[in-house]
Length: 270
Image (cartoon, rainbow, N blue to C red; front, side, top):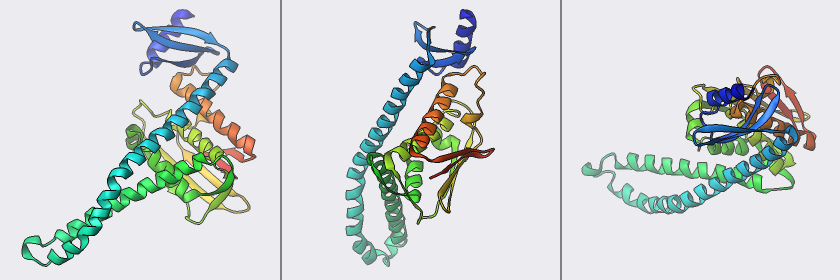
């Protein structure tokens, strides 16, 4: 048994110096020591509590990094945009001079790109605001998912491995506990993204929203955490996926949202 577990860790845990796995129905904590794997059995209840702490630390760190990135970037880009405004009249004065022909078009492209960058920072800032609100309130789904998209693709690997498609009308708002909704969607996304990190797979992550008696949000993706068999041996990536998905469901249940697992993905009714 010990050799089989060590072989499993060597095969499945190359990218990690520490973590958890499920092997032959039991759970183990592992870490690398002098190039060798050391493992210790853990009860599921202990693993569940420890993982929840890890997940909370991860999402808090994620938002702290975003906050620092946006704060530092805005400090640089806002003065640039202001100075471009001061230059506009000068560009207009020189655009008809032969030696400056075409400079106005180049200038407008620079202004457009700078404005688009500022819009991205604005969407990400709005997304962070939702996470900071610990009470029930209105949340605009278009701004939320646009902000989520730009936040997730700050991870270069995700940017090049996941194709995001959000079909959300601008007018659709929902009344939810903003922090719970943000955490639930983040945990759901991470449960799916955990299955492609460090692999060659490419994933489509689609979100569509319908407004009826309730707001129906459909998350579609090819790799589904809820289809992972409870009888399988699970490496750290796959176990993370399963447990993040459980955190998503726990938040949904606490808030009374309806969840339906479908062949396409997960439908959430709020």
